[in-house]
Image (cartoon, rainbow, N blue to C red; front, side):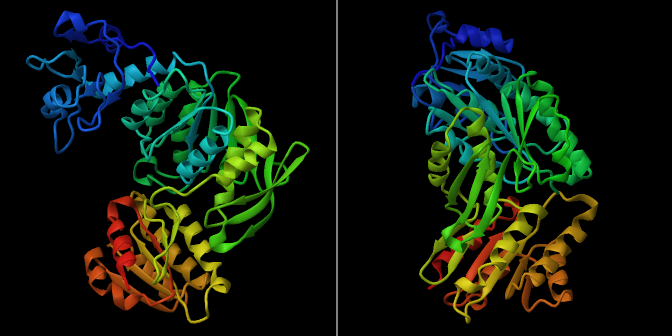
Length: 461
């Protein structure tokens, strides 16, 4: 698949830069855009970005001479290499993506919210892919670098796009939305995340609602109608509500948690009722399926197409992936955590008692949730109290802030519990905390590096 026409001359014009290099390349069309010199395709544009540890300019020659890149987007001229020279390559990348997005007249769906963005993105893309060649955000490339790189993956053949948009501060959503210009926005929830910068739930709502400033009058906001802050939100656009409430335009009825077999429900919209089995762990997965169904319905999908798209869903890395290791059943949900997502994971773990033999334990391995501001201790403690109420048999907490989870669990009458200040201290004891047949949930903020715990649990025999 080919990019729409982007020559080095046009890139220089769009980014306010200057082409430096052999004139014969000036009107050549680039094949792709990448920040990774190892992965760039022949004829691509290599973007030199200065990071905290490495400077992309150091890899420019390899990108051109070894990987076959056509040219570089750089902040200084590079000897003997074709370059578009700009003041700031990050800003230039965003300017380029904003221009490139406007070349496409296809439905673009933006996914925003505190919890469940990636799940909603994956489910929505699965549904739309039944009818359209659909681009979706790869992995978690949802920030000020990832979003432009995703948009620049659009090709002439694409018929729809689903773009995840993640922020942590005021103004960032404006930056993303200026590039994405979504026709449909799915707003999954307003939750306790990035409170150090956003302050409180109203701050979270304001920051994420910046997206509506960049939507046309005929755009559509797909909102979680079970979220009190979203139900009555004035978006300045047409609104479609999804949820379990009777006033939702797309709603779930007869929800049944089938444990590791998934979740079943009836999805109801207009005069149609579609029985759906969502192949993922945890009742909260219903919201992602409803969001996907709402978008599919807006774009004219039938109930059958929506059903088949949802059935195609598979969890992505570190998000409620269930694995039978041969020793334990492992729920790998360690990609990230905030109080909303951790509470959902704990509740889901608490529902599977009847699916395990009586001697098998439900074990929660929980770590710090970052950027929660002044209420961090209270919010962590609430997770421990919830784990006790849900009947979690054994709790392991790792991290400085996770001590409050441990304290809350014991104070609420929880059973067996261990606390470790450092993750690696727990790794030394891991075999003592888990027995054959246990069901083990692993959940923490990404910076805690709980992938190490997941790998160690998989290795137990």
